[in-house]
Image 1: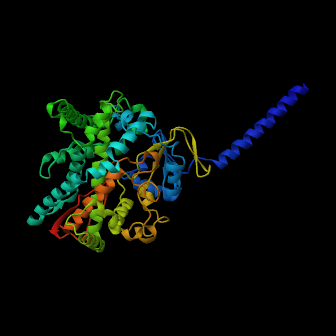
Image 2: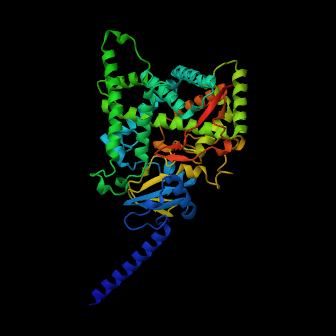
Image 3: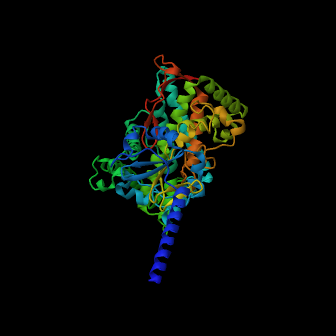
Length: 503
């Protein structure tokens, strides 16, 4: 009997100890705050058509680390540079997995894509290939001539609108320029012409992919419906992917036939040739299937995000003529003092105001406002143990909200490139300064950043150096429509059309 009483007493003390421990644990690490979810659907209705803006508004109430329930999906939204740094740098390994939108499972893209596949074995190989064969400084330096030719073609195209006094759809023109610049770097060929329907066809495919990947899909909220694909979103994505894969497959076949012909001595100095050499080694580093999916990633992400950033920059400058005047004067002063007639990539480092314009555009209009989603493979703690991120929770970094946070930026809604001069001159968008992370940061940072950096600056500089711009139909700058259209990338809802005037 005495032993039983002693055993009960020990058990009672043990239960008290567990209760105290759990209470302390719950106080030291708890679920982040957030809006109360509705039964079954959670907070889905609060996302609206512009989820990055809706989540930014909610974070003003619930804080920079916020939990929302999207159907069955636990989602943690980060809206401060300090916590973004913890997720993307300090605990990079823990959060380097991806939440996969159902549409990106089309044709097993999530298993092969350098963007979406888990950060294990083959992902490291593909990342290294991107760094050494596609976006290395040596590769980009060797292809400067291609980008210069594409700039001259853009200038000739814009000049035709000058002569006619007609308004140019700047987004369309820039899209064709970026598309041909990238396609010549990869395949030594143009894929579109300014006056052809093929450019629009490719634009429709690329924007369709970005739209399907970014818009709400009931399957992402309720995975049990995956087998049904009730919105037919994955079916549409399969159609888009098949069109691009058929095109890339044809290029690979053509190049392989060429390599086996009598003309093999004439080598192509392009990305496709370099990757085919890796594919044809005795111990191949990359498979044909991986090449197809890699080209899809690089084309879709590179063309769409780069062209939309340039369009936003042009819209902000036309809307702010005093800023436009400053950047044009800087361009003329530097280019004339160098004794050149054309803008060269070597000029970029000598143009602090132009660089500030690009940074300010990316602050206000990040191409991927919620970046690419991250995921925690295990339960993790944030903010010195104040919050718990549940296992398998989706983690969204709201770069759009960080860029407009009044505690980080003065007058955050105003377009002020000057903020990046003087004391803020060292802030950049290359993953080290978490106030400005349009390309992400850490091991999953966008691999195409080096090419995007060069392309945005040179295309924007060319449009500004050679031409003045005015709005069509007597539209005043204060009446410009600057509203957004959300896919996985951020576009102007109303395309920017302006009349070029020979500068």
